[in-house]
Length: 464
Image (tube, rainbow, N blue to C red; front, side):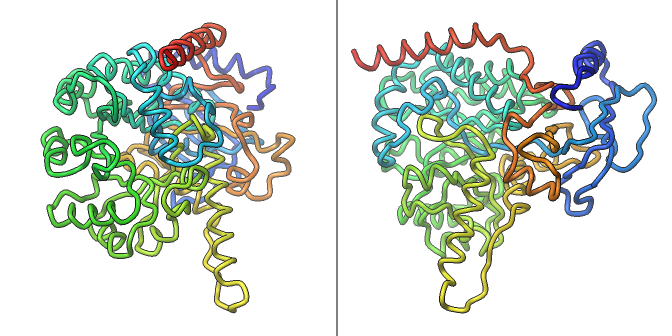
């Protein structure tokens, strides 16, 4: 299926005509399939069968009666990317501070400045824009670290935006850092779970969001026994942001002693931590979400993404976008930044010493962006690789496009060659969300008007 293939619209029409059929079959044929499964590896020319919302088979020369056939020669089928941490509500303020000096500059401008001006409708528009952009860039699962939940209505709006876009979303809810708010969080989490997350078989999941320490916003938002008890009572995971330096290292050791650090807890950034903290994280099974461009560009603690520290204790991290007010929106940038930074550091450390190099590979960073991202978001049995039994969250990348041809190394092409324009199609839970190079169901002129109006409100309210 080429981006300019005239049969593409006809195939989409077939798929949409049968969308109500829970047993609908889609057979992708002739693709190079990057499964990201250690056993299956890469299939140079293979087929992939989707039944309903699930991958039914992967292999050569598959056949399926009544399947809609998508001829995929010249493409790469890969798992959708997994974003483990993005503050989606900020999207209408994209790149408003591209050269922000440091964390304090971001916090004061965005969290103390713009955030209090947000109405529920602004939460909806920002989150919707972020999710649609994620889909456009091949991200099929996004953890929205929604830390501007000023009221129950703000939380409802953010969740509704995820629902309306069709992304596999993780709503990680936290109260705001500054300004007036209803103080409904974390108590409102139980209502949210009952109202939006009652089923275990749905696109959206819920997590508690928290900060590592009370330095920025006080003790109410800092992870500890009280919030751990909330998460345990609701049976949900926890995502902890701003895990930096000595105070966070001490917090990690404290959490371990309190018995509240476990595989259901994700630590975000994890820059400048002590070796003892890293060993404790590994021993407890805690997961790690790195934000490569955020750490390096904003200069968080050491400003070096902590991939070497994670790998040295056996933690394979997920990757994340973080704040679009200052950073790129796509996973390709995160993979390339991490790949380049780690390899630069490895060569620099061994230069002139004769010591052997220890460099990560393109396969490593793609693993972080897919399979490990799914594990970090608590969805390892659901998504992150293309194997039978997992949900059909995948992307189709043009391998013969001008910037990718000829196809010599599929993983290298995904990581180092491709970008959003090469993604012909994205399926989430077996449902096409991008097709023939366009995100489906989006009225771009109307969306532009909504985004501009929301931005105008926030900026005007902030400058008054």
